[in-house]
Image (cartoon, rainbow, N blue to C red; front, side, top):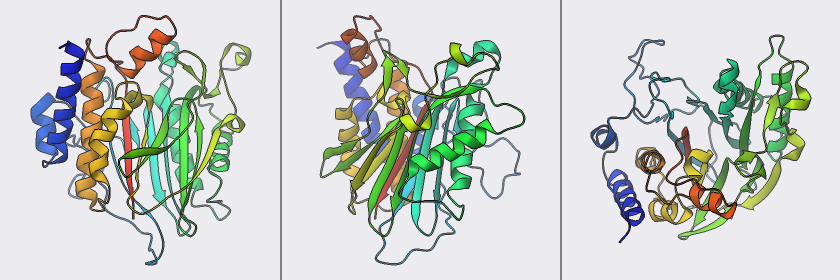
Length: 335
């Protein structure tokens, strides 16, 4: 039996343990890693906090009993924990995310800053973080259209372009909204972040990955002045759109490629099928922890037959093992 099989089995076992445990203690015992958490109310606003998974149970939005909605949690790791030792809300390394609720809809998003900008002295996380924060803010504007996440993404990108102090860089992004009245989920995706919807133990919907060529995803970008022709950039109008009729009990995972490059859909199903019908955010958090830790563990396993490795082989490229990367998991249950 090969080592790749053992690594997958161990990862699945680890995920199962996490999903049935208190979660936080197991995380620290297994790897001594820092999964990042929102500061508690007792913590000073700017003080370092112990790192665990984020769990935010507060909501200012009220719901009518017949409305469909999302219960969501977040978990993630920066690839280089030493570079990002402290919690920053909405960020895991160069990844960024947001989640918010309005009277019309739930809105979620992830973005993955392109790491190559760092060699030019540009923080790739600044671009993705600004884009996601703009999405969150604009979702609460009076003219927000809950059926058009592509418009939300475009307006956030325009907001980024209008900054007096240019925010240079690029990122992939996936933004979605769940219209509570209709129960329809709308998504707009640029690049290789994306979403999966699980129902009755099967994947019933997935976003379309966009690649120019191997490991070169579509991306929103703001190049340095005069360098527009030398930087790969795709406009918000290039986003792949989808609509899907959601049902109570559905499980939605929205994640960056640090998850999908390292964890197969088969493994995701093994873990997340058991989350169907879970409405308790604390229990749902354990499943998010499981996926994030599994992705983190497999990303640094040199013997792992990862989805990234398999995809590289199809392009005649040898890329063995996992692919170390920032990891962001937004997990939601439809209730």
